[in-house]
Image (cartoon, rainbow, N blue to C red; front, top):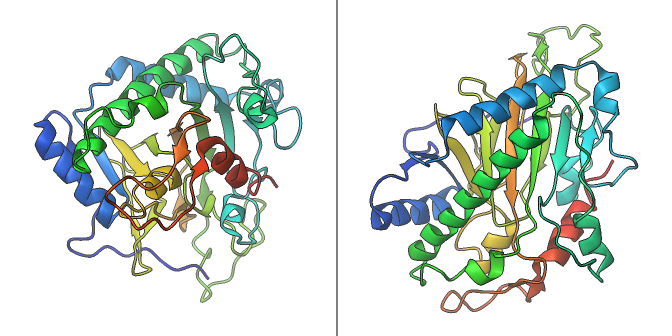
Amino acid sequence: MRERAVTRAGRQIPVIDLSCSAESVANQIGQACEQFGFFQIVGHGVPRAVIERAWVATTSFFEQAVEYRDEVRMPYPGYPYGYQALGAETLASSMGDRTPPDRKQTFSFGPISVGDSIPLDPDEAWVRSPNLWPTEPTTFRADLETYSAHAAGLAARMLELMALALRLPIGYFRPMIDQHVSAARCLDYPAFDNPAFDNPALDNPALDNTPLPGQLRAGAHTDYGTLTILRTAPGISGLEAKLSDGDWIPVDAVADGFVVNIGDTLAQWTNDRWRSTVHRVVELPKSPRRTSIAFFHNANWDAVIECIPGLGPAKYAPVRAGRHLMDKFHRTVT
């Protein structure tokens, strides 16, 4: 039986208004990254119309008949982009945990601009594999590429504020993200309504959509890159973050905001001063359908991830961002 999330005073994910002064925002980000590894942002400047078009495109794609989604199904297990049906991924495997596959379907796409040259590193060539775009909805590609471009700009701005929070020059991270290999993922978690689930005092009827023991919508994991920018519907619970004392707390989205969490790359850059927090998406006794758009910002393929000067002694050996990314990814394929 899984651990339940708890909410206690002073242990809620902070909401940061980016329209405030840079110094104030940077200080708030630094505190949030040390304490939680998660925060939410409002006043971010991404046009509402851009967000809404991407949201409509995402929900419309998942509402299509499966034969249309299958037109852009990943051509083989482990291909990075395209459609994945339920049970195709096990995120908890990235942390060495053996669990049933995740109960979600996804559509993923990678770097929009792949450049003119073919990378010599086969893993980098894999990351820059062609995206698979559906023909329906007709505006799907344009709407998601526009959204991704805005998310990338927001991530670059966040890293400038993070540099200030670390008392670094505002442009410290720029040379390491100017050719970033970021990716995005549209996620759809099916609705689930069963009051007996996760309650041993009640009989659990044999329902076709009943999760297996230990099965979650998204298994416990950390993200791999610099930071993640998540758009999800307010009022739909399920995302939880694990604090340093082992407690899980809910991360319920605020209106007109984004959830932001730092990934393993940034945690290693900061020598774990900032937390790459384990998180998951759980089934609740009554879980409505949950849709999200996650933008996973990654550093340049050849960027060296090593302890920022002044935050040592270093806990980790230097590693190139691309190798770190691939080692994590290969553990999640079902």
